[in-house]
Amino acid sequence: MIPSAQYPVPGDCRRVDSVPRAFRMTLSLFRPGARKVTAAVLLMTWLAPLPPPALAQPASAPAVPARPNLDVGSAAAADQVQSNLNRSVQIGRQSPYLQKETTIIDAPTYELPDMGDPSTAALSPEMERRLGDRVMRQIRRDPDYVPDPLLSDYLNDIGYRLIESARRQHVAGSTSASSFELFAVRDPGINAFALPGGYIGVNTGTLVATDSESELASVLGHEIGHVLQRHIARGIDKSGESMWIALASILLAGLAATKSGDAAQALAVGGQAAAVSNQLAFSRGAEREADRVGFTLLTGAGYNPDGMPDFFRRLQRVTSIADTGVVPGYARTHPLTGERIADMEDRARGLPHPLQPHRPEFGFAKARARVLQEMSTSAYLDVRNAMRSQLASAPDAPVEKRAALWYGIAVAEQMAGQLDAAEQALLEARRLYGNIPGITSGSPNLDVTAIELVRAHHRVPEALTMARAALTAYPMSRAVGITYAQTLLAAGRVDDAIPYLRDKAREDTAQPIWWDLLAHAYADQGKRVEQHRALAEKYARDGAWGAAVEQLKLARDAGDADFYTLSEVDARLHQMERQYREEKQEEKALPK
Image (cartoon, rainbow, N blue to C red; front, top):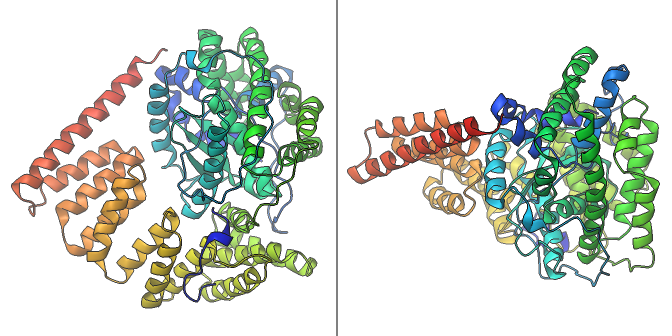
């Protein structure tokens, strides 16, 4: 999120197999008519799934089962999966949180490999966006999607800083780049992936594994480099029909490999080796281009230029430690080589290391991601215990690290329902936060969590006062806005909540949360027709078209609407039904 030094204080408040989880979300697109599009979505990848390093892991955490050993026939396919399932091509949705004080420095211009003109790509930007919107609606319904507004705010802030760096430096493709949205996926593996239309997914394990915001920004900068050069759209034109068949079979083999080696081998038999070889040659060039564009964005946004080579070296260490029989294949086919690392080290050498304002939000986001990586009370408490052990073993650790660990403990206690313990841990995090050198203002992570805990203790008037102060301090934060609306509803201030939520739904129209809260507000008022209309919009954004249509039919029959409102309901119902039919027809028309 924004550097905490820019925030005024509100009141007194001073998972190893990433591919199966992340891409299971889009597996439903692998019906016969959708293979080509889904393969296109996954064509360019960067970070192969790697076993997560032992960072903040509970001592009692169960061991991650090893991948099954595959014989020679399926090993090649598994190797290729590692190369083709984790490179990215689109850019995240613009975050509004970039401040004027953000440091932008002059970065040197580097010669990039000539891979053609991005504007000549076969897949149009409009089609990319439509495909991405459709896939994203399905992802939001997946249990591994992390709908956490605080993590979303933080990731999108970094993405926005990087794309602003691209625009200031006139990087090719940056002026026409579409809006983008970054989101978190519940998975301990180190991975980031992109979808058409400006959506980028980042595994929680990636946040946990990085040691600095510059390292995390290097991952996103590389992704944006793929996007600005439109590698996926250009790959469609270069690859030809045979590549889609090969990629579809390879993807299915990679997914099956987590369950049965025999199944993986059977699915991989149809892969076409010649097409795969051609794609690898293109991928290596794309990697070089994305590295260099990403590095330019990283340094231009004021991040430490060592962030990218540092993260590459971290990946290399994890690769050398993880002897699963699959990672070596990744190392052979995916160009995370000494040459690639040396290239980034050479570019970083001699560049200034800007002294940015310290951003404790990185530590808070990292701790929060570690907790939200889990899904059970016992796992939350294991994470809490691991963080307590880290504090006990390093009592003299930097104050910002101790503040982040106490914040992680507070979130773990909160998720486990231990509200009193969560408040005590959060108080300690706040105390330490106030002792961080140069910090003179609040933190949205600390403030939002404090409001949630006060509200959970039924001290609603106090929570509402805090929420109003936070909204004044961070007016563009989605997380704060959601917390404010939830607190208004908890306080029974429905008449205040409805106009606020209507405005947010219009401004941030793609987000289901505003429509969901608006439906609750109308239900509290007893306005059934408006409740069903809001739920219909929420379901539409979730991709649940059948439920959306049903809600509009319920609104039509609710009996508390005038003629004009019923006319609006009928018009929207026909529009949704038409859009639903069009999407189904488009899917049937896709090449088989």
